[in-house]
Length: 106
Image 1 (cartoon, rainbow, N blue to C red):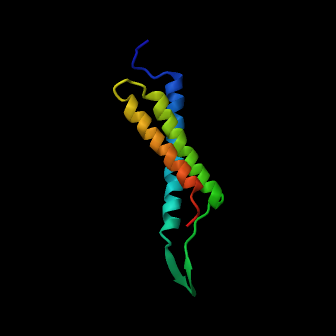
Image 2: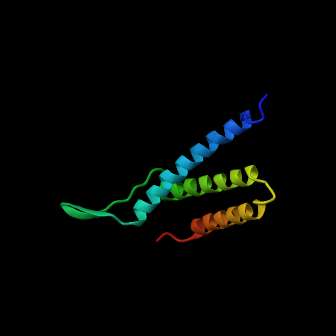
Image 3: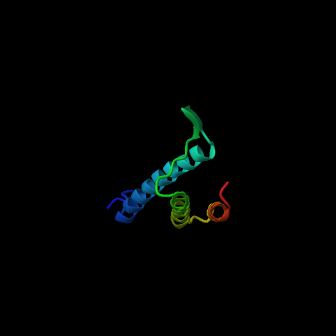
């Protein structure tokens, strides 16, 4: 067997990363659109608010996908030359996610 062929675990992780990225970018886009307070006028002025599952659930799904991507990065990239940088990035991402989760809604 060739050492460059991906294993079943590598293929499984690739699918998980793809799904986590899709969830992260989709709900991140929803959060950015909601934060920008886009307004329109159709008889009365109104503001666009996009809610998929619920405002709390949208934020929770976005953060959980971010944490999942960080932990997969940490588990997959364990080389000594990059270990400190990866741990620092993952710690910052998890701290940011917890901070955003506990921050009051604006």
